[in-house]
Length: 490
Image 1 (cartoon, rainbow, N blue to C red):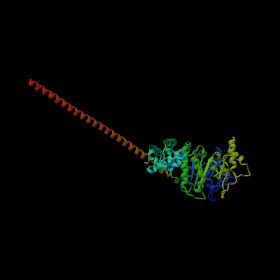
Image 2 (image 1 turned 180 degrees about the vertical axis):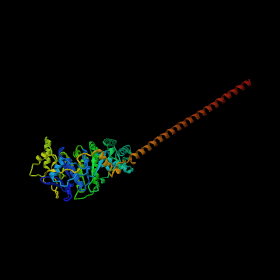
Image 3 (image 1 turned 135 degrees about the vertical axis):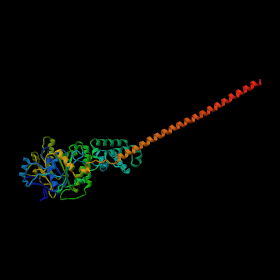
Image 4 (image 1 turned 90 degrees about the vertical axis):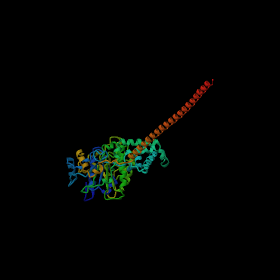
């Protein structure tokens, strides 16, 4: 809950109230805990608080249970008990301004980008291409630029790769060797991306991330919720979206230094999906963004079951931690529990590891950075209740929100302007027609040559026969004359 009078986020209450300083929110945060211990509630309370203070929010909704933020919450006995015991005077339920997004365009506005915006470097890293194959990918983009061919969607890139492979000899001296084996490897990698839905993600109109930075009439930050229930089942496509988004976001935002509050807040639910079997390029990009994007005024929060799901290089950049209950049934669980306990500044009032196992639903161990950036002593506290609905919204209502979006006209209709695929197809069609025409001309010339040769042979034969006939005729005539005179003289 954002308190306007103190300009702080009231997050939880235990022996003392726990406040998050907005100026320290861009030191990033972690919300961890076993299934059913209250992580989603903590996520919602924080996201609502950021929105209330005028900070736009992005949430990757893996489970599909965050859509209810567009409707007011409803009271139940658990929330009423929290309101009473925490002294939440003036607590009221409300809905929040929400934009729904969906790469597949089913439960939100479509999310697209172009091949050109992704670029050869990110694509190569994402597809796991080796140095030679990455070099050819750069050549493909360079030739496309030189020929003035737009690379918008996957069919553009696939046709461009095929074109470069077919004309490798022509381009070898200018751009370098283009091995057929490498071209084939790139085509296979693109086919795998297409099978996961890359043909849906790459296209136009491309998403302008500045559209996420928006507010409602009351100045509350827009909640941008990305439907990921289907998307995360396709890891390559999910990684493609995140890699592009993080890169684009980092390039878009200017350096801001230390601010009173973040410009944007990002929440990645089920964050282990970012790192489990993720492309190396994505992990490297997340690590880079977490390290550097703080200075651009962005707060990044990871929500996962266990802190060990997050690479150490990322955990080392996290200053704010909310740890819900963990269970230690196996040696690995015990190891993870101890690691989670050691990440907190010790509170002499309790044993941290024991407390983590004893936490009830909605309880958490919380440590946040104070105004000087120093981690607070860990507190055992109850998280405040959210003001919006905890239930997933009815699909009909969700669609009504999507249809009412001010961005619907901008993104709902897919564009397919002339680009590399169409131009290369037209070029290939002209080439085939010219080859067919040349073939017809050659066949006609060959037929004419044969006909001419036949006529010449016929004329020679006729002349020969005529000459022979004349010679025979003359000889016969001479014999007849000689015969006549011989008879007469006798």
